[in-house]
Figure (cartoon, rainbow, N blue to C red):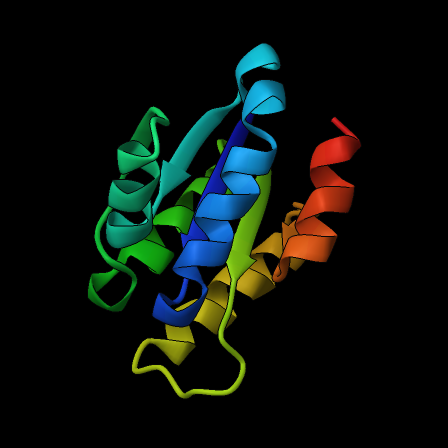
Length: 120
């Protein structure tokens, strides 16, 4: 199973904490993590093996959206910062739309991500 992890700057610490909370499950279920650039670097520093793509504003969200469309990514955890605007909002909207089109579970906050990861 492949799970994409993405977090806006203000949510990166929450993403790493979430991953640490579920590290044993991620390892035991042999979940492959893919991530946008900076989120992936932070996850690697925390001890996770991650396939990294470009940073979100430079096309990383679009790269992960393509993986969703290709059927490679099975679940997306995108901890968004809803209180700030982002220059790559069109890519974010595309990723979310493709998750809906391809029926891929999408969590935009830790509470929803917890429900999804516990369902694996």
